[in-house]
Image (tube, rainbow, N blue to C red; front, side):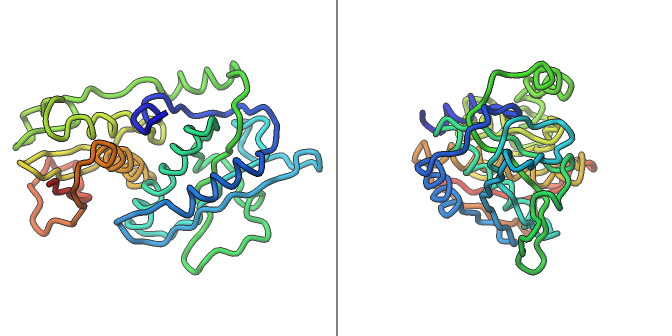
Length: 263
């Protein structure tokens, strides 16, 4: 499975078969964590931790997660760069897990942190803000199906409403230079499926913006930018992210985030 297939196929998994990860799988996941990169700076730690369900551990995820004994934990500092990096880096791990046949689920607000980082020490400024179970998916439960329907996980905004060419009124063609990379961004998961990302293409540059939907909107954009970056890399396209000193003035509800110059 290549990265484009993984982006298209990956879904959130909330019900697992209860089996522990094999040593081989854990080794691959540790490699993915060590290899995750970000151009945005900030302070983020990603850890993989095993919990003993037989010893009575019940993850406090408010009934969302069933049968998981392994969890990723993300320590994230409280600033924009760290939030962007958290989304960008951890989505690389999430996609690798899917390629290995493992399911995950981003969880932010619906867990009790002390149950997960009891005894854990995080670098100064970082705090446990995101967890994700990881393991082999069980048959999708009725609760999981209802949850996906409730948040509209299978629905995405149209390409033409998110991405624009030269000005903020002209929709970008999906066949343009950045069309596939932006389409993979469009498919990215986001909190409550809020899809906060927007983009303006001017020549060989993409200016990224977001609409503040929640406290997780910047992190969500990091996930989407990971999809964009991985698609560019898959297609052997070169480019780099940068902060524009004078980005195009966007609609009032949009906040400038970062730009990308392709070669």
